[in-house]
Image: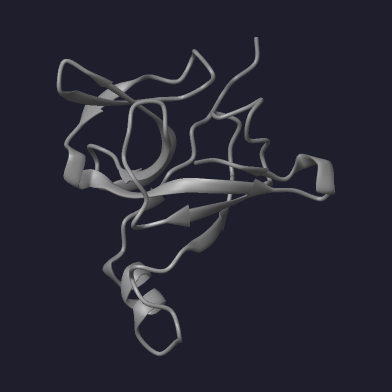
Length: 123
């Protein structure tokens, strides 16, 4: 039996402060992160780079970067049903859960990997 471990990053106020203070970036500029688990495979392989736009349009089916219910950052697909917001992994053995819209920190706009053919844009 394969054991799957979900990896989350604890929300740290300095994360956003470091993006906006002491650099040329602002809180509204896109930033890149590396996917560190297998929860979003096969669309996003572990190790690929995702670009997050904090000002992107939130809609059903979008891939989002959000704070989960334990105030940790998480990358998931957004589902909006009857006005309620849910985050779901592409791998079924990871749980889905409800969030509030204000927990969404940005929209995934592209992915990049080692090969050019792996690059993809999301709108």
